[in-house]
Length: 243
Length: 201
Image 1 (spheres, rainbow over the protein chains, first blue to last red):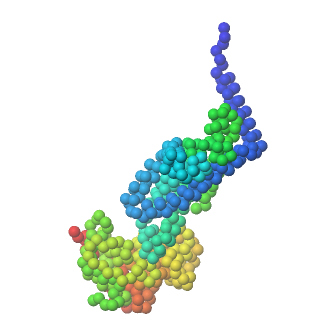
Image 2 (tube, each protein chain N blue to C red):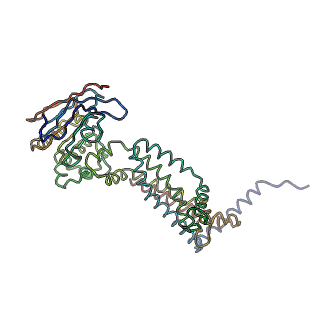
Image 3 (cartoon, chains in turn orange, purple):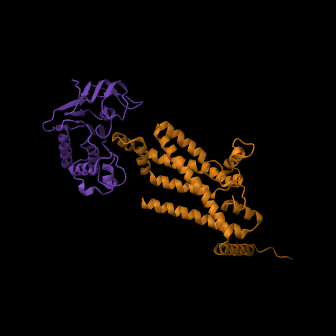
């Protein structure tokens, strides 16, 4: 009579296979697989440009919302919180239909480009930035902006002074926005198309390798993704401690 | 009586915050060389009047003619709980772009010379109030509006502030409006009182 399968030994087998895969993954990273590093570069470039655009658009927008009174702040908060909950695939799909040949922005021919991926990530990152910075500006006492006004500081410089007061929140929001952009898959896959050497990023590549069954590569890429996200997080904490 | 030097003229002026009860202010002609004490119980609208005169609040009703701007050479309001910006005392005193000499002079007048490079937000409450007053004085306002200066200031700092104001007023181009519960005399300078009665309407 056959004995039932020994469950703990199956677990051990799975576990040892996993460790072997991780070992192969690490070897892959150490051996400097050129393609992996090129893909990492694309990921960082796409997300960084998305975050720079989010900061450039988001700071004046947030400041305008904060200065428009309690009503503007409330509406801005509500809109930012709602938009921060947008699923990445919904953003990807919407952008896909807008940018596809028959779509209203088809003439831009941006579909399946890094720019399209950056735009998708900008849409995902902007609400996070607005929500965090708007909250911080809202918490500043009214006497802060009144002190600037009564001392005759020009409106442009008032913005500079007040944003500098909430710089910790801006730093925190920027790194949060980067994490959201860098680790998202849905939008990058749909509007980027995972084209080798062009729009392939770490997340789209992990998905591809997982589907292909190359666990070692998928894990290696996942580890790089994790390390870059952790470095960004570490930089944020270093900055916050500095402040 | 209104003269050509009148900086602010108010008639049937109602002050207050949007959506809250307002207070009626007696007719007012603010001209240089005078100290005005704004007195009255808590919540009688002293702060609202000062902020309205400073151009930080819109009048609820009535007529208000302001013939001076804000900041350097205009009207400057000092909060009872002032906000100091992060960074050094010097950075705070430079808010309105005064000259280096003005900054150092204002710091000296308030005993802040040794604190110029200290982090302003880490100072004691009394020191922070001195920084706020020095910051306002540094931009040489023609009309200084100070909300309850006695809170948190020791006698020495109050005396320094009075000396500064007396000097500016004696130069003939400044006026002072102080919201206070303890009116004090300013040597050789006419003092008038605006008594805020409990809220009306």
